[in-house]
View 1: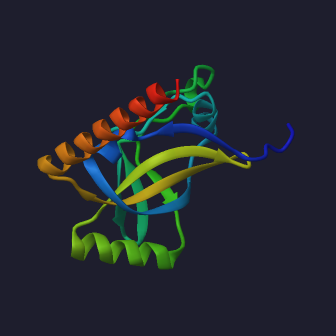
View 2 (view 1 turned 45 degrees about the vertical axis):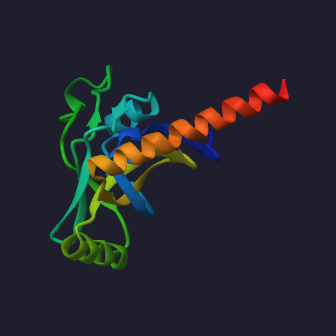
View 3 (view 1 turned 180 degrees about the vertical axis):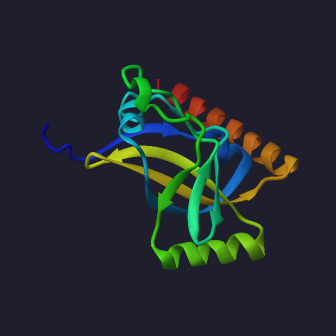
Length: 155
């Protein structure tokens, strides 16, 4: 099998951008089993209700659903099992202090293949209030109207 080059997007967590302010983004690896990787390559992963937490100096992602591989038979794992994220120890310490003191949350934003390896983009996020969500929706609507008006003017 030839070595794959570049980045191929697998899944995005668009709901995270609606519910949270994303302060920082981290790229991290993920510890998976073979059938899970095959299922991810087919795009059968859901990040919507997932979050990450730090336990005993390790980052674990919870609630990420990876559908069982059709041809995996007995080698398939639980689709919702906790999966370990691979980060440098200094990054984990920094994230742990921010999560504990300042009330941030770790949310997986997207999953992609980078040079044949599965990577997860982890976001350091702060929750939005209802009025913040309304403001961001109003801003998006106004930008959409401006773009629509510009396109009509160009025609």
